[in-house]
Image (cartoon, protein in one colour):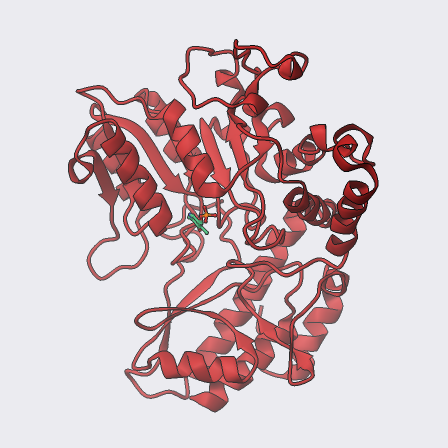
Length: 431
Ligand SMILES: *Cc1c(COP(=O)(O)O)cnc(C)c1O
C-alpha cells in the first residue's frame, strides 16, 4: 500500500475501516477539548462505556441483598467467574475447562510455577528471554531460590545478538536444544513488553516438549493483541492480565490457562485454597481438598466481583469482533505509523532519526505466518525525555522507557488512522 501523509488520506482510511464504530464505545481521555492521542493501551486499556453499568449492577445487588447476593444477585457471585470463562477462553484459544479468571498476573505465574516448575538436581534450569518484564524476572528468580537453587545459575536467558534488539527465533530454539538436559521449564512472554516482538509459541512449545520440558507463557502483552491458540499449541500453562489490551481497569482480575492434559493429574503439587475444591462439597467446609479437574483447581479465593464485572464488560465488547479483523487492522495501523515515521526521518539529520525496535513479520525474529501485534517501539536517537514531556504537553500519551525509547500501541478497537496522522504532525513540529 502506498500511503500518504495527509489528514484527508488518514480520514479516508478511517472511513473504510470496518471497526471504526468501536471507538465510540470507549471513553477517550480529553486534552484541551480534543481526544487525546492515546497510545498506551498496552499499559492501561481505555474504559468501555458499558463498564460502569456492569459495576453498578453489582453495587446495587450488594445494596439490595447483602450476603445473599452470592446466590440472589442477577449474576450470582458464587459462580460469577464462570460468566467470564467461555469468552476469555476464546481470546486465548483454550477450552473453557482450561481457563479461569483469578488473582493477579504475577500471583498466577507463581501459582502455576508451583505446579509446573518441578526441578531436580539434574534438571533445574529455567529458560527465559533476556530483559523479560521485571516482575517475571523476580518471579522466576524467587522460584529457583525457593527450591534452593542459585538464581544466577538456574536461569538461562536468551539474548538478542550484539547490536540487535530482538531475539532471533533460531537462537531460542538453539538454546532449548543446547540446554535440553538441564531445563525444568521454558518460560517466555508471548509478546515482549519492550520490543513488541511476538514469539513463536507453537514452535517453542513443540521443541521443548520433544525434550520433556514443560512450557509456560506470560501473555500480558499478547492477550487481546494477537491471536492465540494455547490449546492447539499444547502450551502447558499461561497467565495474563486484563488491564492492558483487555481494557478491564487498573489492577483488574487476571487469567490463567492450564492445558487439559494436566486436568486429571492429581499428583501435581499446588498451593490450594477453598475455591479450588469441588463445588458440590465446598460449603460443607470439610478437611479434604477435592481438586476440580480443570483450571479452576488453581483458584484460591472467592472472586473479586467488581473487577470481574469490568472484565465481563470488556469481554462483551471483544465478543462483537472476530479476532482476525483486529489483527488485520493492527497491521494497517502499524504500516501507516511506520510510513509517517519514515516521512519524519527523511527530514531529520543523521543521528536524530527514529529507529524502530519492533521486528517485522517474516524476518529472522518473527517467522513467516506469525502476525505481529499492534506495538511499535522506537528509539529516539539523539533525544531525551524532553521529547516525551513535550509530546505529553501536546496531548499525546505514549510510553517512555529510559534512556530514549518511545513505545506506541495503536489499538485496533479504539485508535484511528487520524490519531496516527495527528501524532506524526505533533512529532514533526517538535523535531
Ligand atoms: C504488565 C506485566 C506484568 C505486571 O504484573 P502484575 O502482576 O499484573 O502487576 C507482569 N509481567 C509482564 C510481562 C507484564 O507485561
